[in-house]
Image (tube, rainbow, N blue to C red; front, side, top):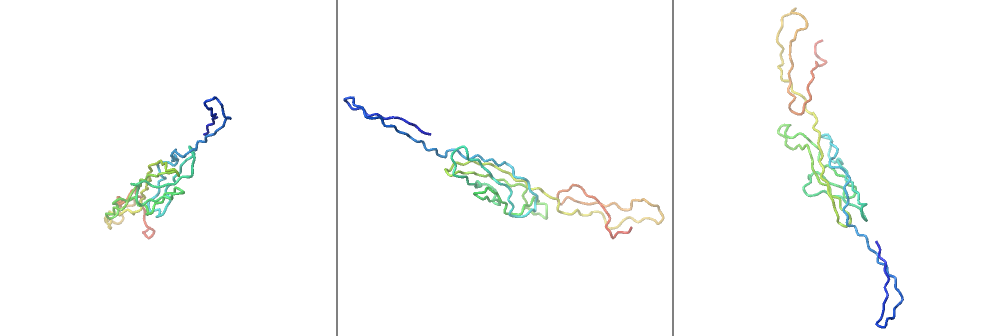
Length: 190
């Protein structure tokens, strides 16, 4: 960071000046890009969790060299529904996440993943970037449809207890499904 040297002037007759001590300071400039310390995956969120959610916070370390702070931005090609706060690194999803792609009456507006690239730039213009993905968790939000008829087969009176008189069937394919259970409503005959 510093050089020291001594200058002496000597004329042709050999007369020598007094020694002059000189110090040269080397200015440390910011020539090292910040290192992004936040991960490459944002924590997954449930669909329909609302618009305006902070879905990721970018962090960076710029201590490898002098630093006058770091600003954050999103690289070109990042999803348009996302924005970033330049000073805090918080990435916000402007829309209500919907993972249902074409599942509801031809709705094709759903998106089950968002991709973006965070850029950390220091005051000297050095930058680094990190690609990030956000998964949207698809929830089961559509009730199953009963597909069996509205009439049970007739049975003769006094034909015995414990008979199967009706088999309910259902279609739960309008959204994700982890199975269906059946019950009788409270107004059913006991």
